[in-house]
Amino acid sequence: MEGSKVFSFQVPTAVFWGSGASLEIGEKARAVGARRILLVTDQGVAKTGAPERLAGILTSEGMDVQIFAGVSANPDVQVIDRAVRQAKEESCDALVAIGGGSSIDVAKAVGLMLANGGDSIEEYVLGKPIAKRNPPLIALPTTCGTGSEVTTSAVVSDKKRKKKVSLRQGTLLCASVAIVDPELMTSLPPHVVATTGADALSHAMEAYLSHAGSPMTDAGALYAIELIAANLRPAAANPADLHAIGLMGIASTIAGFAFGQASTTLVHCMSHAVGAHFDVPHGLANAVLLPHVMEYNLPSNLPRFARLARALGGRVDGLSDLEAADLGVNLLRRLLADLGIPRHLRELGVSPEAIPAMAGDAAAEKRIKNNPRQVTEKEIVALFERAM
Image 1 (cartoon, one colour):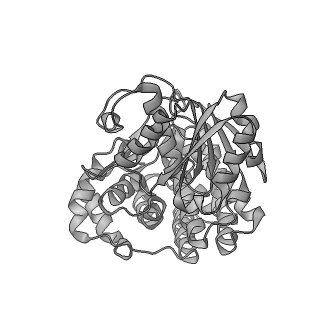
Image 2 (cartoon, one colour):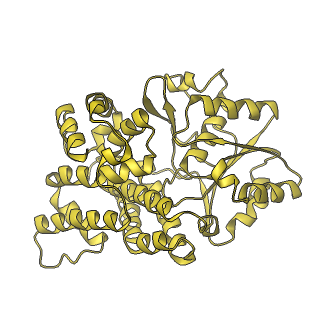
Image 3 (cartoon, helix red, strand yellow):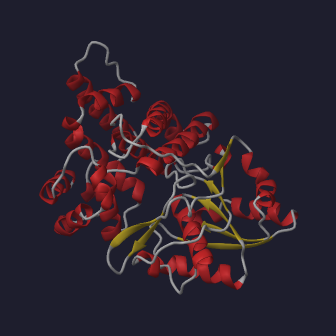
């Protein structure tokens, strides 16, 4: 971080956090002027009954609600276009998203299309400019990992070209309101808490190390890491632990603020390539790649890596920066092992034959400029091979 550099930090999303906060959705929807709402979710969340309960609250407040439950992991152009068609057919003027990052990203992309027009989201994936602000969106995360409820972008899988594209234009795609209710997270399977929580950890660690970071993002990233290090194990062991899962929920949102402003680094460049080629869940790909990339990046800034070790709970007093930095990477590996995260990409069905193509895609990502250590495509190949 350079003292002479100009930083910006924009947070247009109003955040409400706490047990039972989702029950206030009717009040929040009225406040943003919603009348006809498309509620976006996936089949897994739909089976919990939460979308129907929220729709009931909104309906009792006089709003018309239609549910789109067709979101998939790594949502692609076809999924988004289907949701857009339903929103247009029902003349929706607002959106509610309940679910993980995929549902929230789909809702953002639907809002983009409603505001800016077009025949398919593919037009924007291919570079059509975004000019108008999205209609009101209320985001209710049900996982403790993506932070999409407060980020500025929507990620779309372009399966035709085997790429993942992050759509953004300033704060035009941001949710109007985020409601982070721990009670929406207590029914998560332990492995989902583990992988989404590791995703949040990746967001925070990458934001802290990013060249695009600032004092504001540093503060949020470090606090998020501390919360995750202290609460992810108990939350994954027992998702019904309202205290632990609640702190993981707010940690994910804080990490979302941090990486939404500071962006991410090489981990996300590589995980996007993995997800595009093999449809691996984003958080899981991040979790497997994170220790390999952190180890590679370690020589770039030993004092920062030493500070990460402290945030991860390491006792660094009396250690050199190098010793503390090494401790941090070891603590990270131990945490991921305790969560049952696979150590290698091959365990996720990733094929070594795809490494050259994935490395090329990762090297082409704009966010690679944020990585704290300069990296070549050849070195990315070696990192993929190490992670395989």
